Image (tube, rainbow, N blue to C red; front, side, top):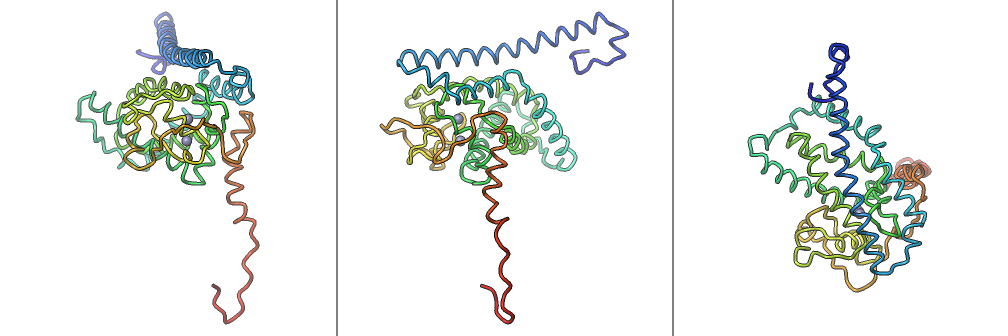
Length: 310
Ligand SMILES: [Zn+2]
Ligand SMILES: [Zn+2]
C-alpha cells in the first residue's frame, strides 16, 4: 500500500494500524504539497501589498472594492479546491477516458524515449506555445471570448485576479490542453510539477507592480507585459498573449510596448455582474446575445416563383 487511492476495504480490516498510517501519511503529504501552494499565494499577496504601501496607493479601492472581494471568492474557491474536486477532476478523468477510448491514436508517445529533463523542457515549451495560441483564440474568436472575458473584467488588477476565471472557461481550456497532453503522453506528475513551479509567476504578473525584467522581457512575461494585456487602452487591446514566454508575441506580431500613458484595466464598453455565481453564467449569456439575432431573425420571405433569391 503506497497511497490513499490504493487502500482497499479488506486492507482496513486486515491491518487497521497500517491502514491508519497510510491515511495519515497521505494527509501529511497533501498538506506539505499544499503548503507550497499556500506559501506562494501568501508571498505574492504580501509582495502586492508591499508595492501598494511603498507607492502610497489608496488601499480602499484596491482591497475593499466589490471587484477585489469577488477576486477573494475566486481565490478561496481555488485554495480550498472546491471547484477542482467537484468539477475539474471528474471532468478531467472523463475526458482522459474518452480520449483513450475514442482517440487512442492521439497517444503518439513522442517523448517517452527521451531523458526526463528534456521531456520536461519540451513539455514546457510546447505547452506554453499552445497556451499562447489558445489565449489568442480566446481574444480573437467572439465565441471563445465570451468564456474568457470574465478574467479581464477586474478594474483593480491584483494578485488574486489570477484566479478570476469561470468554470466554463477552465473546462474549455482543459479540453484544449488535453490534446497536446495526449500526444506527448507524459507522466501526470510532470504537468503538475510545471504548474506548481509557474504558479508564483502567474500571481506576480497580476500584481500591478509595473515591473519589467529589462532585456529578459523579450524572453519571459513580466508584470508590465501582462498588465498591458489587461489594459483597455486602444493600442493595447488584444496584445501580449504570452503565458510564461513572451517570445511568441515577438515572433507572431502580437507584442505591443507599454508606452507612457497610465494603464486603465477592465472591459471596453461592458460591465459584468460582480458576483461569483452570476459570473458563471456570463459565457452562456454572451453566447445567447451573440446568436440571438440569428435565432430570432424572421424567416426569409418566400421567393417569388420563377425568381432566384440573391
Ligand atoms: Zn486574456
Ligand atoms: Zn491575466
